[in-house]
Image (cartoon, rainbow, N blue to C red):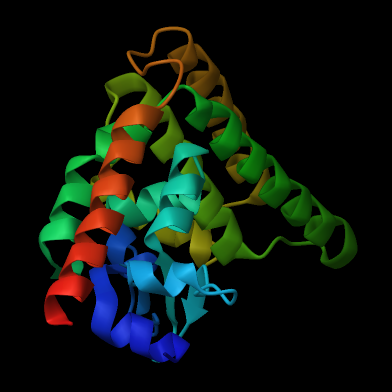
Length: 232
C-alpha cells in the first residue's frame, strides 16, 4: 500500500488549517489541509510499518497516522491541538467523530509550556531578523501574536478557539507592517504576562487523560482488524 493510498482510503478526519482556519485569510492565502488516517491494523504485523505521516498527495496537504497524532496531541503540540479544533472540517467518519469528542482529553496545563516554548523560538527568530535586516517578518509576528492570544484564552477558559474574531483587523495590520515593532513587542510582552497569570488560575487538569485516549486507540485498532477479517 502506497502512502497516498492511506490518505485517500483511510482518512478519518480532514480539515483546513492556517490563515483560513484562523480567520486571517486574504485573497493571496494558501489553503493548508491537514488530516488523520487510520492505517489498517494488519499493516503493523509486518516488518515494514506504515508511515507515521504522509505529505500530500495534494498541494499544502499533510496527514498523520492516528497513533502518532494522538502521541503529539498528548504532549500538547500546538499545531496538533489546533488541528483538532479547526472550524473548517472537510471529512469526518465515525472514528474521526470520536477523535473530536476527545479534544478535551488532550488538554492540560502542559499547553503553557508547549505553546510558550514554541512562541519563544519564534520570537528569537523575529529578533534575529530585526538585528540583521531592521525589521521582522511581519507575517510571522502576526501569527506569534495570534498563538500567544490563543494560549492565554485556552488557559483562561479551558477551551481552544482558532478564529481570531474581532482581532482580525489589528492582526492583519501587523502583517502589513503598519504597526511599529516597538508596539508589537509591547503587545507580545503583555500577552506573555497575561498568559502566566492565567496559568495560576486555569481549570485545566495537570495531565491529559492518557487512559481515555489509549482506550480509544485500542478500540480503533481492534475494529480495523475485525473489519479486515470480515472482508476476508
